Amino acid sequence: MAATPGPARLTLELGLWAVAITVAFVAWPPWAALGAVVLVAAALVAGRLRARWLLQGATIG
Image 1: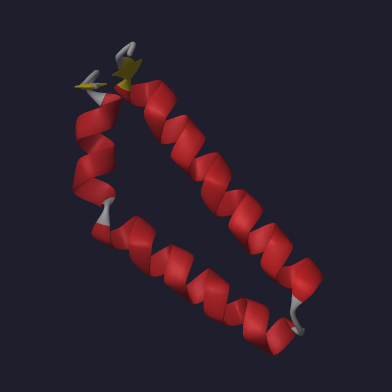
Image 2 (image 1 turned 30 degrees about the horizontal axis):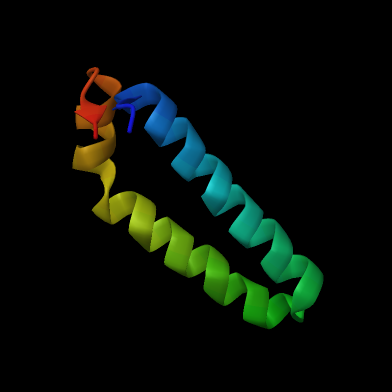
């Protein structure tokens, strides 16, 4: 198993969040998709210290 550099890991995670929001708006009515946006925003706020750590070059794995 290869280690993943922090910035690459953060890029992958942000991409997954973007896909989650996009699919929510495609699959659900707008009012329900806004719930997904709120959850993603809360996750981003909660994970901001981890994101800073990953951007500093941490390696996962």
